[in-house]
Length: 140
Image (cartoon, one colour):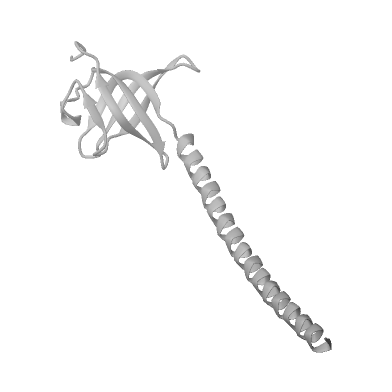
């Protein structure tokens, strides 16, 4: 009887040891999974911050009269009313290959005196036009 009891005790200890080893493996796997989840969450937060920074440069619009066009520099100067100061001011706007023109084919078709509405974004301290729409009947 003693042998059976001793054998049973040894078996219980062996099963207990295997269960503990499996438990430790499970804890290690959970720790790895938590770390991976933490990294994914961090990447998501960084993505949200970057997206927020892009939203900070949301599109703005401006309406005014073309004062000059610089074909070499791919830009134009627009005279417009500053609504905060009620003064007429000039703003330089850059044009790039993503700029959409409506009412004209491109920068080369813009003329001084045309009235335009421009959607633009500020990028690296410059105002870059997304859309330039010429009002019909405003050609000089």
